Length: 453
Ligand code: 5BU
Image (cartoon, rainbow, N blue to C red):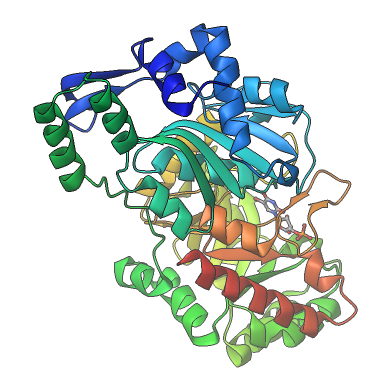
């Protein structure tokens, strides 16, 4: 192979770096402009590039290669062909139809994926891509980059524990071009001045703490829930999907000390009797300081929901601190849940749910503007003004064979910024319900603390 400098000069001839005055997307004027896409149009150069990149890497570490779309896709493909490391393709957006997969190709959970990027500036797109890849239960340890613009991105990723391998830095590029008299001293000093003053600080959006959420909320039920969370150092909601009053009360007693709320499906209690089921349950809730959330998932017109909420044998309005409601009936349908905080169903955890991106966005608009809504049930991130409740949590991942899809506490707090995790069978099916609740409580609280980092 020719020297690295000779190789760079070959690349340079394709017009990948231009010097002058360029206004960047951010509005900042830059003395140079980099676009590595032309490299893919010269097969010989692309092949050499792939080999230069591979040479820098501990190849045995990787099971897969993935390029950050779009510029790095041909680079990653060429690297895969040269190394025989399998390629996966990350979409920019998930398909709206079909499999909805964000990553295409053949891979298995837990495999380590090498990420390929053309240019690194602030590191923002890499941080986002890594989160999406980790979301698919793949690992990322190393990132390989063709050109480092030396504006802080490499350091940011290294601080997060990733190994970042860069083929060229902009300073090296300037030196090589100066040696070849392709850049004059004045241009070089303009570039140096620009780099010195232009570390692009990419502020990662930090999640709100429970204290911050508490300061922001006006709703009495969210206040109570957040205060309870802080007091008990718990973000655990146990789902009591049991079918008798005795089992319900026993579970509430056992898990009570460790939870912020108990979620009920009151219509599955076979021997329901208001005085025998609800009154003692409320007493247990007072004793152990937790709220009750009736997962009724109302889904009708306002007038019917008003009746379903207060009448019939369950008289939900008289005892539920929180209720869940679909938003399918529209904004006004939720105007009548006056005694409870409303948790709106924005997206569901089950396989094949119809709550696609469009539905989710429209439901979110209603949830954000309705004063009775304190939060949403979702498998996606939602704005900080709402509390996020995430079911489908289990220390074991996978599913239940009936369509439920499970995530771990780590995953929902880290990637979704969940506020409260909902655990059903992970606790009530356990031989020792109290121990299981404590285990989930600790896992959830630690995952929350880690998500603040
Ligand atoms: P599990 O045993 O942890 O799978 O119980 C989950 C509970 O959360 C159960 O009561 C469901 O009705 C509830 N749930 C859910 O699993 N997924 C959703 O999207 C919604 C509610 Br909404």
